[in-house]
Length: 421
Image (cartoon, rainbow, N blue to C red; front, side):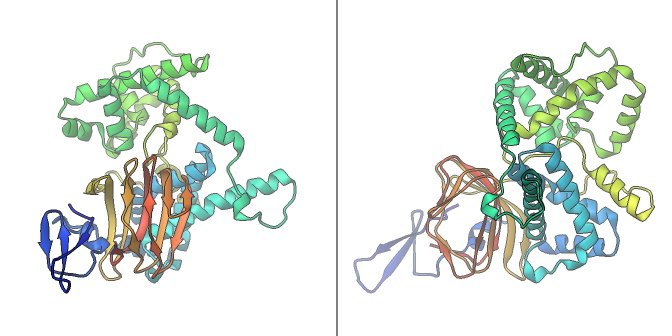
């Protein structure tokens, strides 16, 4: 779908022609972001659906909180880990973010921004506050907050994460393409093994086998690469071994998780297999994907925290409530995943992915624009952003050159009335 618009001058000096692709048109207003996003006849997810969840949470509906968590936790977790470079910290703070949503949801004002934008800003604030706290601890005093420019992840965490990335990339070379695809389609795409079998047009048993063999190949390769065994493990004789591996890779439907946990708790062999694979899945934060997923389910921990406050039983949904939109190519080298559209306020929340060397068109902001970079590097005019960085643009300002040499992915909250130039 064309996004680039060139102006060519007709032989008559008083008449301009606009050329879109190979077609000529009479002069018209410059294209807007909305023209591009809604060119295909596909109904976007309305912002009202997100706002309705917020209203239900304010009324004490825990299922609504889990539904909102399901929609937003992956970009939240990814942003926090990019800022802190620590998996345990990112998991803890992700729970904190949604617990704060539960406690302070009445403070949300749709006039101030979209629901996803509100949550992402809380995530960024939480992560930076944690880094400031750690910085004050190291200085040995409780003085003033260090300037934002001085806040950074622990160098040891950064080095460890970088080393894990390198070792995992090496380990991934031991997988077949089918094994890697099975793990990525379940763990990172968030599909159950049954849904993955349908998408990949493969028997369910084949998907289960590929997940199990892939996980154990990674376990072995990571052990060899580190010079020491991550865990010792011999073949699991239990017939439920594939179930255990699917549970580890978070490929089971929610309704089957409790039964799997009950079996593992009763089976020493499956317990050992699970323990041998946990460290492998923990390394998945270093998997070369742009939007990560917590390596363990945080939903249960969130439910237990709320239950401890309310004195009630933990509330957990038994089925997935959200089907994430697909990536759509809107121009060469540019893909968007439209998460929410506010038709009243002309705002959109989306994931944007630029291919290496791709550019986003020059544009003028019709409203506030907020960008959280999740992966890769991004240049906005003369400013270079790296994962975890944030960019704010005020209405009526413009960006002349937005491009990525490496390729990148970001959360973008902006106006559909932005004028593309």
